[in-house]
Length: 216
Image (cartoon, rainbow, N blue to C red; front, side, top):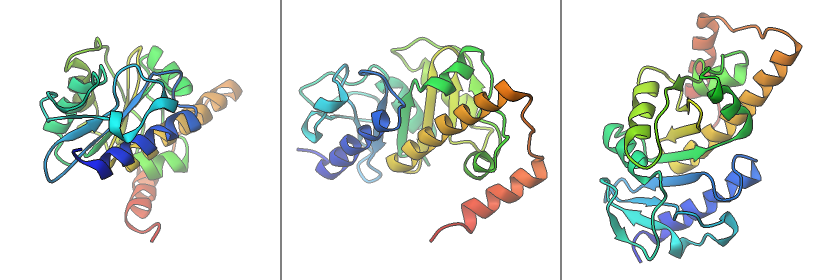
């Protein structure tokens, strides 16, 4: 079996999506690219999260062609692979329809940077890209075009949901979790009044500290 360790990682990370209330039923997916071979491990299509196992993960090449699997790959595979081909620094991608973030997406609104946690993780607002249909590379094109000029590792897609990226699949999942957490905070704040944006200068300082000083 190809890439057994990466299969296990991707399988385990899928369990984090329902645990963090990011998905419903079979929606959403995680993929990871193996830097050495360039092969991608991604969720099979339409299988409930409780039934996912390392052996039913799908291995594809970076063009989305199945290399090893008894299952059909996720319907988002072509878009994941488009992102990998155009963003070599990305080795993990997560797609969710998480509730609060997707509410912003239905309005084609970015999530404004009004918390220090957003400044830390995203370095500014979480942008929203345009509408694209599922099944081909179009969603991947929107994701690349939307985040290429932002520090944010994640973005919203109009009327759809969230795509989060990272140098690893684990970091992409973290970005997806943080996207929903901050979307919920911002939405709640909007019920009380108009959230106060953080200045660009302070966002820059917070982002630099978190990315380069914080942690071990």
